[in-house]
Image (cartoon, rainbow, N blue to C red; front, side):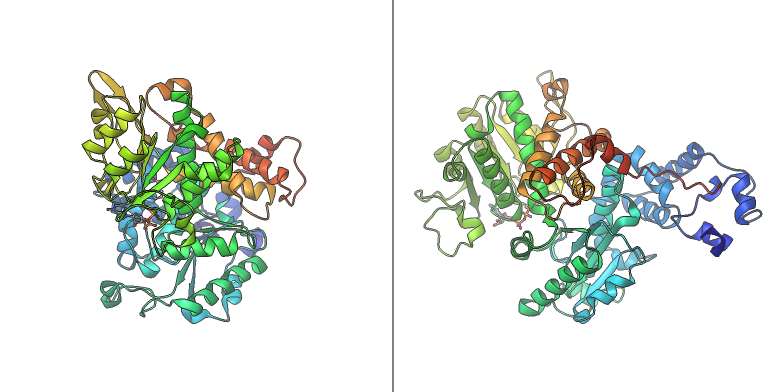
Length: 542
Ligand code: NAD
C-alpha cells in the first residue's frame, strides 16, 4: 500500500500528513528527506504553533478560515487542537461563526469538502454517492440549506453546517473523520441576493418544491441505504414543514434523525431532569409552556411527553402538561388549520391572546423560549413565573444571542435569584446580590455526537425516542452536585468526550434492548465504545 504512494502524497493528503512531525526514520523511509525543514517538531510544539496563529487572527471568521485550512492539510493535528480547546474553538467551527461562514461561503471558498447533490442529479444520485472516495461511511449529515441557524435560506452555502457538525462528531465523540460525510442537497435558493452574487456557488434557480423535491429526497435516502447501508443520516437545518415531514416519512424506514427536533429535545429534557434534581420535583409534575410552536417546540414537547409516559403518566395526561404559544396566542383545540404535529399540543381552553396571559392562566412550572422572539420573556412574564413557583424553570433558548427571549441576568434578577436557567446562546456567569450563578447552555453538541456514536457502535437499524431519552438521562446524571449548586444544568464542555462516550454506551444499550442492534453485544459496552473512538493520533509509518 505505502509503496504505491509518492512522497508528496504524505505531505498533501491531510489524512497522511504529519507536517514537520515526520520522524527522521519516516523521512528516510518515505522519501521525504529534503522536502521538509530539517527540525523534527514534536506534537506539543506543533499544537503551540497552531494556537499562536489561531489567536492572532483578527476575527472569528478569519479563525474559521484558518482552522478549515488546517483541516484540509493536516487532519489529525486539526482534531488534536480542537479536542484540547473545544470550549474556545466550538463557537468558531460551529455557531455563531459558522453562520457567518455560510453567508460568505462562496467568497471564502478554498477547497471542496463534502458531497453536493443537486436538483439536476435526479436519476444519478447513487452514482454521485459512489464517487465519494471513502467506502465505509458511518455518519452522514445532510441539509437542503433552507433554514440555516437563524439565518434562513442560504442555498448551497448551507454546506458549512454539515461540515461543522461532523467536525463536532469527531471532536466530541471520536467518530472517525474518514467515516463522516457532509452532504448539501442543492435544490436552488429563493434568496435574490445570492442568485445575483457572481461568487455564489450553488444552482442559480428558485427552490424546487412539491413532488419533484420529494422525489429527489426519496432517491437520496434510498441511495444512501444502498451505497452506505451502515450509515446514520442526520437531517439538519431543513425548514420546519420539510423537517417534520421528512422525519415522519423516514424515521421508521431508515436509520435517521433530525437534530433540530430530536437533538434539541434531548438536551432540553436533560436540562429539565437536572432542574428536577435541584427542585426535587419529578418530571411528571411539571407543566411546560413553550413560546414558539415550530420544529424545536414540538420536538421537545414530543420527547417530554414520551418521558412522562415512561415515568407512568397516561399519554393524554402527559400531552396535557405541554402547551404552546405562538404569535396568535395559546394554541387551543378550536384553532383552525393546525397541522397534526402542532394539533397534538392544542388543548381545549378559552382563547388566551399572549404569553403573559398564558402564564397567568396555566401557571406553568417551566417556560421554554424557542420562538426567535427577542425579549419576549418580559419582566411581567418572569415575575408571574416567580409568583407561581418557588424555583421557576426558565429556558430562553432562541439563538443567536440577539434573539434570546431574555438574558440570563434578567431571568435571575426578575425572579429574585430563584430561577433555574438554561439558555440557547452562551451567557457568562451572573452576580446577583452577592451570589454567583452559572447559567446552563443547552447546546445540542451535548447530545447528538454521543447518540450518533451509540448508533454506530451498536449498528442500530433505527434511531428511536428511547435513545434520546436515555441520552438525556445520562447527560443529566453527568452533572455533579456542586455544579448544580452553581446553577449549571449541564456538565462543563471540556468533559464532552467522556460524557459522549457514556451517552453512546447508554444509547447502544437501548439499541440492544429494543432489538435494533445488528452486531453482537460486547461484554463490556463502555470499553467497546472507548476502543472505537478516534483520538487524533498520527499514523505511524515505522
Ligand atoms: P421554527 O421556525 O420551526 O419555529 C419558530 C416558532 O416560533 C414558530 O412556531 C413561530 O410561529 C413562533 N414564533 C415566531 N415569532 C414568535 C413570536 N413573536 N411570538 C410567539 N411565537 C413566535 O424554528 P425552530 O427550529 O423551532 O427554532 C426556534 C428557535 O429555537 C430558534 O431561535 C433556534 O435558534 C432555537 N433553538 C435553540 C436550540 C438550542 O438552544 N439547543 C435548539 C434548536 C432551536
